[in-house]
Image (tube, rainbow, N blue to C red; front, top):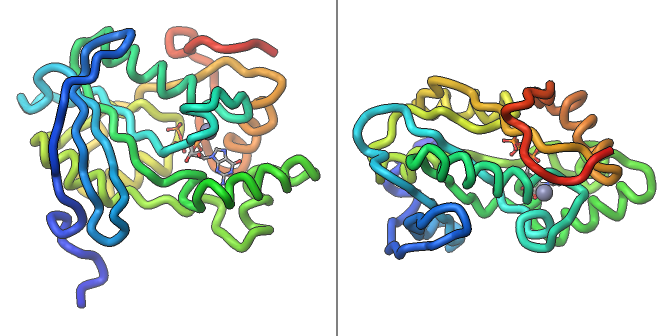
Length: 215
Ligand SMILES: Nc1nc2c(ncn2[C@@H]2O[C@H](COP(=O)(O)OP(=O)(O)OP(=O)(O)O)[C@@H](O)[C@H]2O)c(=O)[nH]1
Ligand SMILES: [Zn+2]
């Protein structure tokens, strides 16, 4: 058996609908991953299949930040900021990957938060639980992007490993678009650890900053 499956065997494209948001009316596309049954999503806007690099966000699920307004991380503000940027340009794609907690799942992320309350940082907590610092896998991006004939991204991220992962998949990243959020008292040490231990590029670029609290 080959080490990696051909991308068309990884997931099925199922269906789509319109998704009005405060910023634009997107189209929401649903994919189902064969090996896990997980439902992954793409939100698209405008003509993304014309060969021009596409403004894109590859967002990993964070139920606490994306849905429950958690201030521990920057995920909710990044999600909103990315959708606003796509709406401003009138063209782009957001992939919403169901790899909660950097791939360790929601319950384990809550365990990791508890360890963080006892003094561990976000990386140490994962390691104490027996996981890698970052257990995510981006291979689904390739068939999801292929569904829309997208070969080149202007990727909204601060994470150099995400860019490497795309390039290794054969998806060109023609530009990195920073996606910084303001710091607050709760996410400050998390953001510092991402920069120090996970290599995130967190230098402020005023035009890239999206809302939120202040420190
Ligand atoms: N295990 C764990 N996962 C976390 C923690 N905080 C956020 N996450 C998860 O981390 C993922 C988001 O990763 P981030 O490192 O914040 O950002 P990124 O996607 O790598 O990089 P950007 O593209 O710059 O946002 C989501 O899946 C969150 O659920 C934490 O303390 N522990
Ligand atoms: Zn988060």
